[in-house]
Length: 444
Image (cartoon, rainbow, N blue to C red; front, side, top):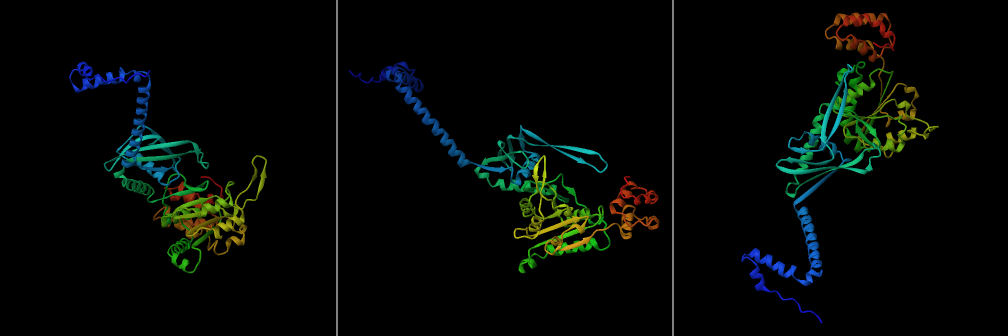
């Protein structure tokens, strides 16, 4: 026989309470729930558990909704250029709170052999809090333990910024500040890029711009090259209207130590350009990778191919590594002047042995301007002497007289510079040591 439902005794609830609302609720809960045989049998517990689960889901969905409505995220992956800019900016930002730091060590070797070490503490993986223009932002730097950058072996990272939705416009302002800080750090300097896998990366610290006058070439050579480059940079419309590929190649050839690379570095400083150095003899450099790199050169950069005569490696077999291959001659020609070659590109090639170059490489469109950078002439000797020892005209004439007497015709500017640097404060000692220039391999 079914049992009748238990009725609620309100008089009992009222008598058991102390008259207050809280007391009546407590007595009512005991009467309805605790003393209820159905609840004690488990049905009420099931209903209570279901209610708590529904409430929990409601809270989670509600918090998610509020998060989407009130907060906004910005993700910066480590492959993006602004990633390093932001980390550097954040390391210098005053209004930040970081519990996790990483160290970046830079070592600078000076000309005198001294070594300077600098330590920079940047935000490490973890959570950080910054305040930017009155808005608080949570910064979470995460490192993936499963995904690696195959070119460097380092794990991929992301930086996620979270702030109120109303302050989302500050993201653009903050990234602009980070970019301006990076540009200011390189202002007045030349950045050297080298290939790292399929991309260009800065090599070492930015270098102070080298003055064009510090590289002394024979009379008129530097001025003619600079004039030609400047004319090219202002002739973009002329090239495009005539359907001519907008690129120009230069070949500097001559003996070692004559100042070819130094002049290119000084030219980059004069034009406010950077330099991308590509080693064509690298074993891992293939035709496809060469073409990719030449089509993705950073803006305002000169592409430098040093010792181009040693570029054409043949396919060889080695016992340790099996077959190794480098850039082929046809691959270089296609990268310089093929269908997929780069536009708006200035390429400088250097060589000590121009006779080894194939005529196909030297035709216009690949090499448009050739210039010999030879051993030092008397014009260069005089200018270098007076640059190191200003106002010493008489001693300069004495140096040149001894120079002629020894019939020194194969002295490089690097040798002269070495002699003058060794006697940087004593021009008379430099005159006494002129005979050392007869030996090109002498070390001071």
